[in-house]
Amino acid sequence: QLQLVESGGGLVQPGGSLRLSCAASGFTLDYYAIGWFRQAPGKEREGVSYISRRAGITYYADSAKGRFTISRDNAKNTVDLQMNSLKPEDTAVYYCATRVTDGRFWSIPGEYDHWGQGTQVTVSS
Image (cartoon, rainbow, N blue to C red; front, side, top):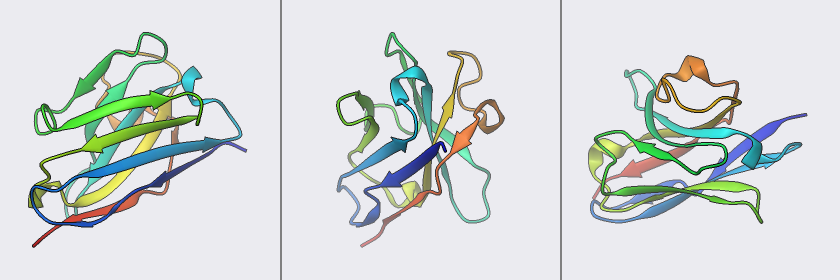
């Protein structure tokens, strides 16, 4: 059974950092392109970052550029999202998701097949 589990969320002050991890069981993550999404209360789920299957091509939402970094750790079978300089508007539940094809429409949730249950990130003083 394919399962994704996010971890690393929590409460952090503005300007702080968190490292989220997306772990897989039942399959190997490097076969899939991975997206990180977030959803704040009352808002639609939005794409934050993406990493392609093999070439490691990455994309970021404008709100994440320069602050977030997505990376793979194939030895651990995880995809991590390092988030620095966090702002209150980054507060949301963060999800990772898989898709079997690369590229187009990376930020559209409907393009993804499997989802984790999410991890809460709260940025507040």
